[in-house]
Image (cartoon, rainbow over all chains, first blue to last red; front, side, top):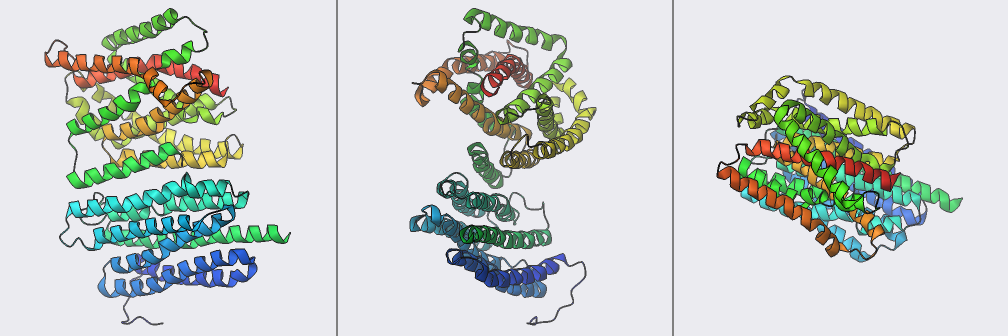
Length: 244
Length: 301
């Protein structure tokens, strides 16, 4: 796989550095999760498949984002949102799959998918369709987007997902869902922070746009790969229990 | 993350939106907004000190009110005689009180738990001063009767407390975990709140910053604890009855506040709003902290 246009890359171009690492790390994680499907019991195969899809989709997008950034020097906002709109709902699907043993219903699945899609569509409208840098536009869509985020946060920490995890009868699932909840709380916080850093945003100027890209790349890698590893750990532990 | 941290986060994002939309919020609007929440939750959380103490009949009603009001009166006198000392005393008492309310429910079985309370509270107050020292300097310099408190800021001693308390607190968290004095879930929750506090105090103006902590991580939590405590004593207690219990002293405090605003506008009271606020909050904090210390001993020991 070659770059469409070969570019000289400065050794201190950390944005390019993290795009390359992000792309390869996501690809490697994807391969890992696919291969490890063979190590878990049938009821956990779907969870690992979803983890593999999350990192696989991200790997493809990071491949394009890497090129886009090198050629234009701009932050690949369009690609980021295309990536998130696919991968974030899939992360929410993981919550459903993990709590299925405790009775999670399809309704929970759809609620989480809708909330995450809402969050991302509103965020995209706020960020990408604000060509005149209007503050009221970005605030309005930012608030609407945050409502979706807060719904998911509430569900995984003290709402339906948390309650299902607590009643699952499995300490591994309970702990695992709690770890994933931390990802949503801390890991996903980079996204509203990044939103507030754009032109006209409250935190604009606190970070340079290059720094923000680096943080996005690192956070994305940790959020997606880390998320998948937690799911993998649960799947392996539960499989061991079943085969013991 | 618990329900109080969640509410904190909701209002954090809401306040960030307000700041984005308006660029900045004037100090008057900050005060109005914060006073609203303080009147709603901050004042009520101390409004049933009488019920908490009198619930076990260990002291008579008259003795309680006498001691409570006498301590307030003596502290007021102290303020007029030694204002800087009184201010420092207020910071010390508040630090311990905030630290105790933060950690008491973990029932840490250690002879160092009081030290933990002090360190946490010192972290809170020194961090507020550290991130907002310029604004605090401007605030204190705005009034003739509070300009003397800028000396405290110029000493920069709060910077030493800031570094020391933050480092000590992180060491304490490690010790609590290693010695299994506190479970990992609680420590993670505390670390999250610690990060939230730093972020808030850094990003928002001092009045809003402190109100965030005071309402969401302190007053609401204490109100919940008080409700649970009284519910055990009075099994027919419900939310409406609890509100009714909070009302009398809350209303007295609000009337007192309105009277001050009225008389200060009439220039009968030669006291700036800021100094009035500092004195009235601190003189109430003294007996309230003692009551709460006994409360926590009762329910958690």
